[in-house]
Amino acid sequence: MIQQIVTSFLASVAFGIIFNVPKKSLLKCGFTGMVGWMFYYVLKDHGVNIIFATFVGAFWVAVLSHVFARKYRTPVIIFSVCGIIPLVPGGFAYDAMRHFVISDYNVALSMAAKVFFMSLSIAIGLIVSEVMNQLIRDWRKRRGV
Amino acid sequence: MANMDEAMDVCLLAGKIMLQNGAETYRVEDTMTRMGIAFTGCLPQSYVTPTAIIFSFDGSNSTRMVRIEERTTDLQKVVLVNQISRMVSSGRLSLSEARSKLKGIEAMSHSFPVWLQILFAAIASGCFLIMFGGIWRDFAPAFVTGGIGHAAFIYFNRWIKVHFFAEFLASFIIGCLAYLFTQSGLGIHFDTITIGSVMSLVPGLLITNAIRDLMAGHLVSGISKGAEAFLTAFAIGTGIAMVLAFF
Image 1 (cartoon, each protein chain N blue to C red):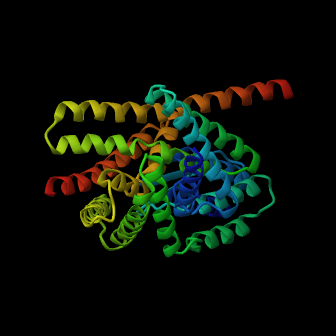
Image 2: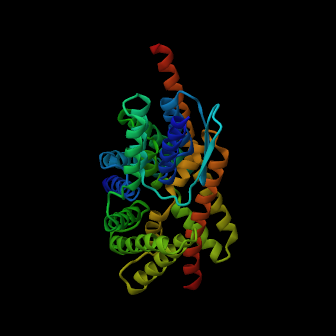
């Protein structure tokens, strides 16, 4: 568990450096990536469907990115990019490829379908959080003015 | 109308820097619109795709276009241009000041040296190995493989001007190295070493931007970025598949 926390944090910071994120934001990138990954990991560990776990992870990455972006007045993508990368289904894509190579198309296609739906759930996680962000912003505006 | 032409120049420069360094399409348009209004008071019209910007002012006779040849990822420049656009729209920065600052940003280089990026790609590979259920004994092989793979990706990208080929070669090299490590007994699991090392090539920015562009209604940009992300992933997969087919 602790090793998962440390490695996901480090991996997200490393991506921040590869993408040349401003130095001040690096730790926040790491934190965003860590939270997203831990939601995914814990849910997966408790037997939740892996596609739903990806959705929840992506959703929290996007929520945190919006919070940081508003607080520090920087573009959202800086934080969300680093956080999303661990959730990309690299392992399943690899497995799908491996089965395609040995002509085991039945397994390969079902793996590929899983990869497709996991990618889709990342997109939906981002979209749902964006919608919530806009609703909250409108609600605040209406109350404030 | 000299003022309008100059304003157009500065807006296009800001848009070009943002687009070349990995900003979303809607942010580029939004930045150029805000800056244009602040400079001239007229409403700008812009059309941005990943490969070109078309920009004009309402009621102006001239329309300008900028072709975007190369795109990299340098999010610091996106942040800095964003700050300048905020200062311009709050009236704290004049046209000529904004121009000289933007020129400065355009000339800036990556703030982390290449060796540091490669080192962190190597660290990320090791971390991904653990995250995907690998064992600590495979950490060092994944570290080396991921580092060399990312270095190969950076240098191939500079030498070969064919899109997706650098990703293909880099993942092929990663596969070969992982195979060598497992054959020599230094590594145990070929699968996890390969997956961990390949992760630093994953087109994360393209995926995120494609989704955000589609959400904002920029269908042309969103779909073309999605296609780019898909082809990149496919190139990585092909490189690994070649290794799997050989051995």
